[in-house]
Image (tube, rainbow, N blue to C red; front, side):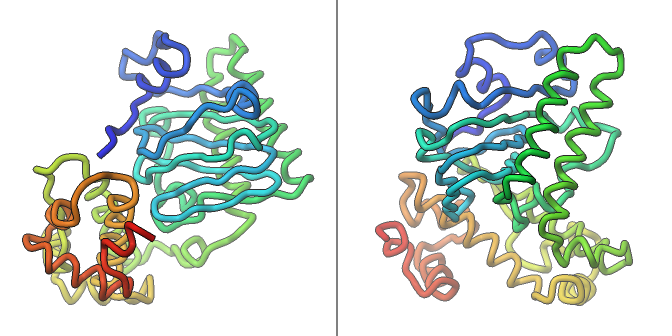
Length: 298
């Protein structure tokens, strides 16, 4: 299993130095021109998780691997990366130009739960292909960020938070989701949201001693609600059963581990809470119609 990259790793690998405020446990933000890392200067972006958020705009073609998916971009796109979902980029020699900004959880501390927006949540849409006009607007946003970073204004980071939020809402307006439309804050929605948050916190799995919750009753106990109450709330909001959502998340993680680690099938099954390799193999085949080994070789 690849170690999750931290902001410290990011700066050390790119430039061999660290910003002063990175060691002071403060909120961190920075914005960069992508041009130095693509085309003829392309650097490999390995498949792993990072413990920071990243928003990238690029012009050109590339393939982006998110969790167990691979997405081909032909012209230009806006991409949102979060600490929960591993990713890598391929074909960066086909990228012409772009920008990216990075920030950590603390940057938005007491300023909003940025991780709760669909562009950063597991199952949400993380990549938006853009028209030329949309791309122009995004470029303007990143140039404003660059200018603000160079300013001496005392409250410039408040402005930068606003600019990040503008990019998030710009993307979400391109493809409104049912989740955005139906999030009304009722009791069922609150319980369903807490369940999904708890499910997301089970991952990534980075050590063999890590245990995860696998059954609706275990989640209900953690949320201090009856299992039937949890099941009704989740079904009402998502249209799926609690077990279906848990299984989908387990399969997503299983596919990641099968494709991007050298762990054996039995080791992966154990990490995901299956004490016997045969139980894991049967579960995987039931959910995907393939055996774990067939998927790994495919």
